[in-house]
Image (cartoon, rainbow, N blue to C red):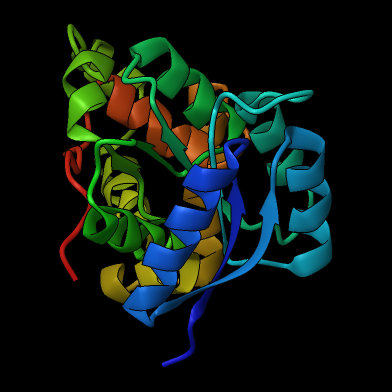
Length: 217
């Protein structure tokens, strides 16, 4: 199995070096670059083509939220997994809205982090237990999923698991074009422009089963 390529963005050199060493002990991950600030993280994400950017929120010059937004704005952008000291709902929501696919707090074990890296590389949304209970507090399913049909919700649930359009089409015995049409309808109804935004919206409304811990591999 090919190793996943990870770009590590962390401003504290000792933390960055320790994280790199622990990640590479796993054998399924290789760190292809390191950044100590936001602009460097954005530049290296484009230059090195990692699968996942492991990114702190509190980066100098350009914070991790804005760096995530810039990284994810480019075609074929890598996934972004936030690893931060802030177990805060607002930070988590801002990160996910900026395009991050996962949000972990630094109390996570290295096994949790590696598992989350693999999950977000597949497009699965991962939230740390410390923020999930706040992130989704008080949410519900107003007005029958805000106008989404049962089929559209079915597709949303599969998208939340990281399945691609072709995989969803095969599973539901639909054409890929039909799945794309349903996704376009979902985007229009929810006022979003991407799968990640749609899935994050669904999670925030409590429509989808949230993965509160990184998956065990």
